[in-house]
Structure formats: structure tokens, C-alpha cells
Image (cartoon, rainbow, N blue to C red; front, top):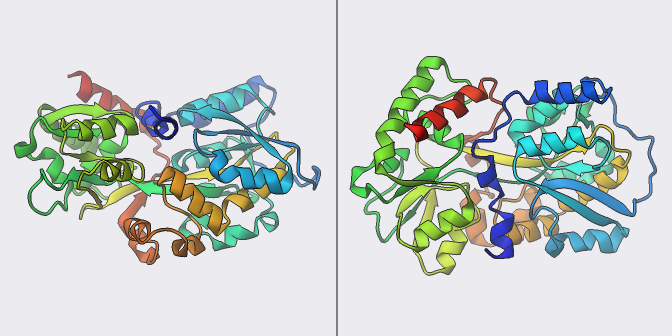
Length: 374
């Protein structure tokens, strides 16, 4: 596995870890440390207003890569020391178990609200982050990073969960999640070993609120997944695994988390495409946040502002393949990227259901485990 593949295998680690009961877990951990699970009411601006010599990050691999982070160190003299995570659960565990050890973290959008509610993060001084005003509205005002005290997060990058297929081996127009149940591709279909497989199935069934499904709706999803199971080659876990399944010819159609697999397959000469099905698709976005006990809010804000510079966002896209969050970056990336993520028309974002906190997440995860074990 090359360095880039390693960096972006990380979303596969989310597949069953989940964040079920995160708020309760975080609150208990805080209590054990003598803390309180109450959100901060104002940014902690009492710290130094000069860049620190070190910024300690708890983040996904690749999110502080030297290809785009070196400019930050050169400008501010701040070295970024990163501890990498494989899931949001791991992020919470390290955050609560190592109070005060981190200055900045990068949770996903379905985790951020729980962190705010548990008092694990502090609100930001947005005046220190002028480039935040150039992010797409849907990220800047996302309720998942808003709380008592103001704004708690600045976006890093985002992507959606599409259907991916080999155009040379799948005939006709692919415009629906139903292709993942098409018997003519039996034994050549793969789906993500992740809670998003439940979301995708629900969308196919016409369920619009995939994050608040009833017991009956989850039952419908289970029945549909049981129908699909005999058609699958396997459930894929990492981006590298998905890429290899297509390269080897074992699969011709599946789903992906966007961004990474498609360019790799095209570089390998494969006529692969990703599409947002007519039923819609879910999408993820990762945010930078500051732990409640960090005294390095100013330096963290400098990093957040730096990572939102249009030219840096373009560098992030080049390395990760993920979509930029700064509106002005559209003119700095390739036309293919603009088209892939509809960066020239934010109205297309309306087709996407960005991940949300799922209150009965454990029921969703148990469903998927049960289907796989049956």
C-alpha cells in the first residue's frame, strides 16, 4: 500500500465503530477526569496571541500532509505534530483519555454535535478565521457545528457516497441504487461495510429521513439487504480494497466514498464513473475543532484559516481527491473536479443528505452486523 492509499483507507475504519452513545461515553469520561459535560459559552481567548511552536493534531491520516501543510510551518514557524485516528470513536477515546494533549481535532459531521453537547470542544473566535467567510454556506452555517457560544468548527473537505461502476462492463444508463441489486451482475457487486449501506438502501426504498428511521423502516431495510447479500462478492472495508476489487475484475459495480478510488481506476486505464443516483445520496464533511482544554485556540485558528485559503484547498484536493469547501477554490482545480462535485452550482448540493447524528445508531449497526452474520 502506498502512502496515499494508507492515508485514505481511514474511512473504512468507520464501518462499524460508529459513535453510538458518544455523548454518554464522553460525559462519563469527563466526570472521571473531574470535568463537566457542559458546552463552553464563549471562545477561550485568554491564551497567547502569537503562534505556538507546536500544534498538536488528532486527525485522520493525510489531513496534515506536508504537501500542503509545509506552507503553514514556513509562515508561522509552527510544527504540526499529528496523532492519527481510524474512527470517530477512537477520536473520542483519545480526546477524553488524554485531556489537554491536543490542540485541534478533525471529527466527521455526524460526530461534531455530540462533541459540542458533551462539552469536549470550545467555540471559535471567528474573527481570527477570515477565510471562513469564503466557505460554502451549507458548511459555514451547518447546525452540527453551531451551539451555545457560537461556531465550533471549520470545514476541512467533503465528499459524497455515489454508485461507482465500470462503463465497459455495465451496460446502459446507471441512475439508481437498484443497480446494486441487479442479478445480471451477481457475484460482481460490492458495497461498503459501513452504516451508509443502510442509508443507501433506505433511499432506494423511498425513505427520505434516513437518519431517523423507525423500527418498521429498519425492518424493510434489513429485508432488502438480505435480498442483496447473495449477489455480493464481498463488503469492502477500505478505499484500497475497493480499488483492487475493480482492478482485478472481481467487481464491476459498487459504491464508494468518492474522491479517491475513481482517479486511481482511471489512471489504470479503466473507464470508471461515479454517479449520484436519482434517489439521492448521503455525504460527509470533516471539520476542524478545538478541544475544550486546549489553550492554543489562536494557533489552531491560524491553521483553520490557512487550510481555508483557496490555493491550499486546491492542494488538499490534489492530494486527497476530496472536495474543497472554499467557494473560491473552484477556479483553481481541474474542470473534472468542478463537474464531479458541482462546485460551480451549489444548488446541486440539495441532492445530497449530509450525515447527521443518529440517535438510535446502535440499532442501525446491529442491523448490518445481523445481515452479514446471517
